Image (tube, rainbow, N blue to C red; front, side, top):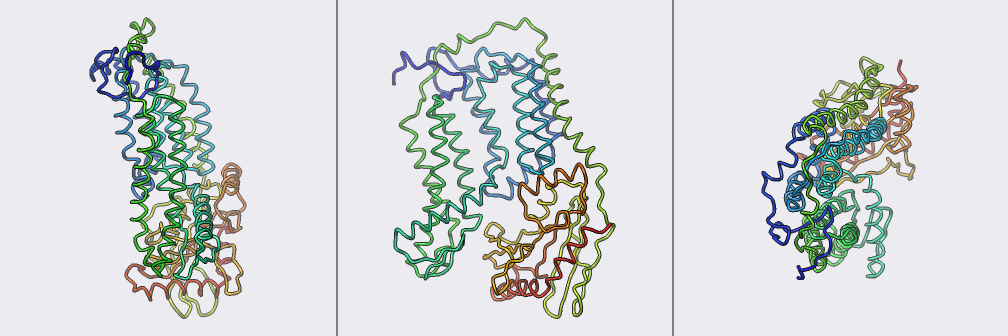
Length: 534
């Protein structure tokens, strides 16, 4: 490796901490801390206040990290950022924080973005804006030059946001299409309808868990980390990150195709899919090793030169850094607090239009009684009812919200009510009668391990709706002007403990749900009418 005339150093560079070229020995921790000592109080206070202001976003993110395997890696983001900053300590030599309070005005569009995301009920958007305020805080307190030296690690903080679930349907489409074409090339007879793949050995379903989101998100996070540590050139970094996006999508297609082909040769779809999650992680690990092998020949890990010392700055002659840092942090948090305060003011007048949800009347032969109270605290009024119509008992959960609520809590409640054991293996479809007619009101969620089923529906403005951007825009407008009817969310399912049932009992219970729903079409109107009550 030629160290006599390396390429020019860039502000955001990933260099080996062991490098000791013309730049001299990398600074120790005490030397690094001297550069930010003046603004440390403002930085700590700013981070603390931002954490309080956006505690809802933080709690929602952490909960997602815990329950979703696609985002478990988020717990490592902050330690990784700390390591990457430490790895750049030679580049930070001589840099001193120089607060720039005027930069805090960049928080105005961020605050506007948070309010739009809050009215639309998009938690990921709110979390992105919250992290953007953290980035702005660092920029305002450190100044442009010091911020640029660690911009890569600081931007990595955006991986704290559990973002990307909206990609699942598209990833399911890609996986299903890849499998379809692969089976055609291999001349394996198959009937494919949407995400359902039928071969002679059995039936496979491209569920949400099979879409490859968990592989894609983890691969992108790894790709960005690898690019920041191994490359200096923006072109090489961008090329590797792009590769880390494309490769897992293609690899997941091969994984799904491989499971179907394995089922074909084993003669059993269940045998092939029994350990498909384990197969997936093994396959993904091999893909990551392949990405590492492909990237190593192009690495740029030469050491820093004395160019770093050329950026050393003389002691500042401007305002006191501590005072300027506190002032800058104060401006950032004041701007950040405007949107949550406005949202709180808008929501203060929201009230649920009924004091109690009445028991449903499904006609002769059906009895209704109050069911077990839910332990979940939600913004609306909740009701659990046990309904029996001469056969199995069904549990119907209903929640009604304020007419000025946003889409966030309504969609979140629909998602909660649709959760079943082993939820990530769920398939969702419209309730369909024997003659193929779809209800367009009830969505049936089914799982296969164990077998379970539940039907969910949502009414907005008195009309059954499906989540989407159009619905969110309508409810954002209603949150300001009011609506003619209150949003209602409902779920229907057999009153059973699914995991404790035998496989045959599970299948019978799931089938009884469809029978019950089709036998009582008046259930739609009975629940929908609750939303229009004065």
